[in-house]
Figure (cartoon, rainbow, N blue to C red):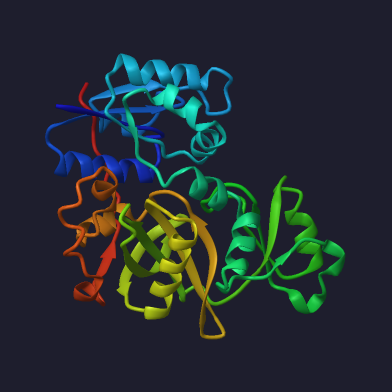
Length: 316
């Protein structure tokens, strides 16, 4: 019997991960946490505990004790703040926190780089990947530059993202985003793509691309999409950061060419969709790579996946 700990179980990513573990790894006991009890995910795990926020001074002390007292074998940090906190401590400090537990993540470099949209934009430009222009000086923005996107520089997700079609809208949006990045708006809403990438420690990579539609800020509908140019871009990115693990790259078409507008340095909300197709990057990240060599996204080209939410009644 193995023990696995999944954080931030109130969110859809953690709940998708828990579903995969429950359906696939029968010999695992699932531990979960979130910052309060009022989380639906607590009904999906075997053991639940309230955790401090990642920016709490006692967070690492709590985490160390939690991992040891529960004999956790695998730890999956999901929350963006938690991932950033883990990426800021030294290898020696991280090893002390983890003890004998294995952490399942994309690694310090990927988390630190892709958690900062400004650094991500610079990185993509340096390796020759097309990405929307980022504006650093408000005085240089002309009327012809609109529309623009304003969003938080750190983290990911759909919160606090504003499309601005004028300087007045731009100035107003900046009041709601304390640490913003201003990016050129590109493409059309029906031409957005998300790519899951897993790179094995051997250096071999697997990629699956979806053309997607957002529902409530997350992928609600996805069609498996074949595009060799996007695949090559993905492999270029993970090779440049020497990735060992899983990340998510988001594209839009800019004048017919793929342009990367964001990268999530972690397992993403399409992790369960990918798993259904045999792209088992969660399991691969845990060393269970039996299906890795046989996966080929071409056999699923055109397949459509969609998410349906269901309500359940808890036991009294």
